[in-house]
Length: 445
Image (cartoon, rainbow, N blue to C red; front, side):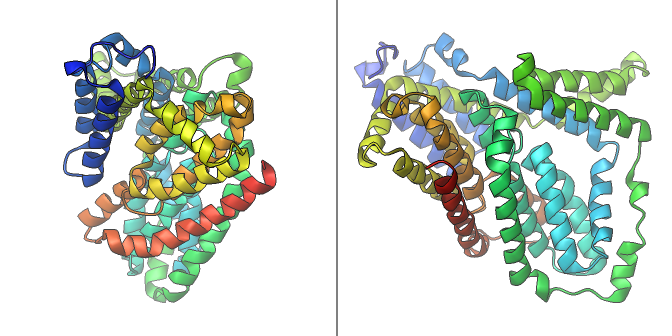
């Protein structure tokens, strides 16, 4: 047991077992999807505190402000930018660039989804792209499922390439101290290869079999993408601020400013530009709407997760697991990396990849002494990122973006069944992990 663990655990029970049981119970309920995951995480925090595993000060110190600030700031930026219509413009532009051919449209929407997911985040991206996709496929009178499936994969693959693209990467970057540039340099090359292979797979499974009539294609080609821009001033302001925020992410290490500060500063500037000309009542209305758009369920889920995992970490259980993993792999860094990659992929497909990564980060950190320090284990972080982010594609519950798309689709009358999705998705996910395995072997081991 960690020497710093709370000494007053209820009934004198072992902090290790109490903390671990609380975490496992929370994960089981989250997987069952009967209770909202934010509620489960916060109840887990309450149990950690009331059983004495953590004190309140220990719990609050576990919350990573950089992760929370980065997520909140980006959500505010996207909420305001979305009102300009820029994202709808991109979707229609992509469809017309493909000449409204279903196969080409699938490629263009997938590429647009991947790029937006890298620059924003994958959940936000699918919230923007899926409704427009539904509009276009209805006009073409083609099945929506293949397009939505392709966009799920594209969002998770594209999001893997940057610090801000996928919640697991935000966790890894914030808690480990890896920069925006580090993610791009280490992951973007292989993500481009994986995305290309994925486009080919979805084309052979669906794209080449779908066709639309000339009349329906003409209707889509007749759409005016420019008409989706509802506020040109806001568009210019949003693009300007987003570009500055991206530049800030690239150079944040040089200026010694954390990504959360950059994101929140960008959010504050765009909120100011969006409101300064309005009277106080209108400003309050706009700000309230913007804050309402923030995914508070995700924010509080992260907060609860940080605390629950911290309780397990302080109990000593994760160090015990780390020692056993190092022993099982014979103390070989390459073997450990492969184990992290494949285990992360399979487990992230079976449980949400966010709580999985939150658990794995302190576990991998505990391995550093066995391999010669923090610098020596950097390849393990890329194995974790690739495994968790790409593995999330394997089932509907593997990543938040998957469930988001499924929810929108079912409201629109397009069923997304767990088994049907998995039969297509799991083999495709394994292909992406096999490619990643070759990459990490070639580049790091």
